[in-house]
Figure 1: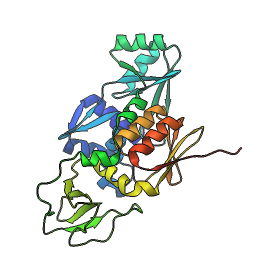
Figure 2: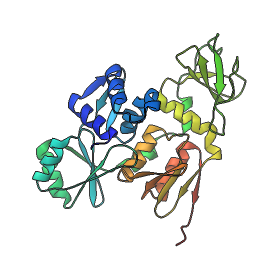
Figure 3: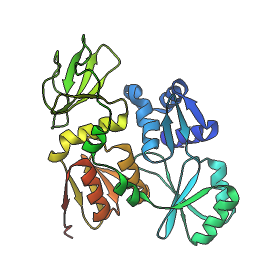
Length: 295
C-alpha cells in the first residue's frame, strides 16, 4: 500500500497545483497520526518540498517538473511521478528501482548507461541535469548575512498588545514576556494569532521574518555555535532540531541520492564529503567535526 508521502506526491502530480485549503485537506486525509493533523501540511507537503518534489508559492503548492538528476553512476527522479510513469520507464528497458525512504516519498533510482537513460528521458519530456548541489551550497550566504539582507522595519517598536517568546540557544522557546528585551535574538508573538516572527539585531533594529526559510536560519544563528555537524567517510550527521533550512536540506538530500535517515536525535546523509559538509557548517554558523569510525 502506498505510504502517505507517495500518495500526496501522486495526487499533486495529477492536479499540478493546489491552493492552500485544498492542499491542507489532501495532507490531512493521508496523515497517519490524528494527533498531528495540525502539522499535516508541513509533515506531508513540507517534507516533499525539502526533498525537491514540490514547491510552495504564494497562495498555492505546485509539483516540480519530473527531473532526472545524475550522480556518478546513477540518477534519481525528482518532481512529478505516478504509476504510469514507472510503467513507461520499465517498458523502455530502464533499470528503475523504487526504495522506501525513511523520511518522505520513495526514492526512484535509475542505473545503467547514462546516455541510454537520458535518451529515454528526452523522448518522454523528462528534464535531465547533473548534481549541482555543491554549487548551490557554495553560493548560499551565511545565515546571519541572509537575515541582514532582510529590510529592517522603519519603526523599531514591535506591535503592541502581544506576548512574546525568545528563541533560546538550547533550541527551545523561552517563557512569554510582555515586551522584547534588548540585544540580538529571534522572537515570536504568542497572541493574538497569527504569530509574528521578528529578528532583533544588537542595535535593536527589527526585521519581520515572513519566510519560513529565514526563520530556520535565525534559529541556527542562535543555536548554531552550540551545535556540531559530524562528518566521516560514510556521510554527514546533523541535529534534528533546529531543522535545516530547506535549501541546505534539499542540497544534502540530492547529494546523498535521497538517502536521509534518522539516527536517534540526528539526521544522517549518506555519502556527504567534507567539502559539502564544510559549506553547510559555514552557512549555519556551526562547527564541523571530522570523526573516525572504528570497526
